[in-house]
Amino acid sequence: MLYNDGRSYQGVLRVQPSKRLARNESRTQVQVPEKWQLYAQSDLAKWMLLFNVLGAIAHLTGVIVALTVARREFRLSTWMVQPVNDGTVDNPKMTAAVVFVGWVYPTTIIVAFFGLSLGFHVTISAFLCFHLSVGPGKWTNWYMKGMYYCVAPWVRYDTSSYFRY
Image (spheres, one colour):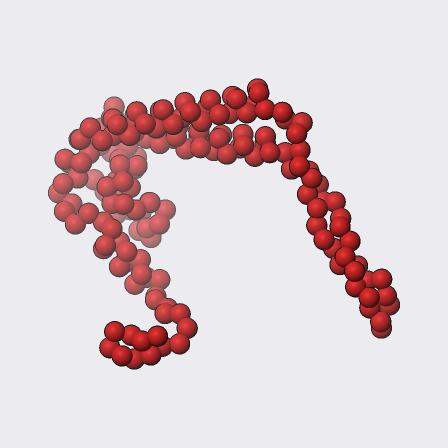
């Protein structure tokens, strides 16, 4: 493969993490910070609250259905192939033996998935409710700032600049 200027390279191109993060943030962040007030006061938060509440209701329904209708005794067996030496140390004769590992209960996995999704919907709905009822603040704008800058707050290194409003 060749660079744009004709030089060839071997393997994968490596980029410094700090340069990559700075490049991604400059590309994804909104370039006009004075529009934050317009964004924060728009009807977007109300619509997002509505759809998060609907998502929470849907996932709560999934949890209830999985706990009441699903067969909780249904289980799937898991097995692994383990190598076995039927010979001696000097003259090994390797074969394989199938060994039982345990049981997997799909209902438990489904309930956990729906429960985690329900938890996230409820948490985001709480942040949106605080944003709409309390007004601007360090914690009430947390989710809306993340949506505005197109970046999760745990990705940024300097969170103090993230919470400014």
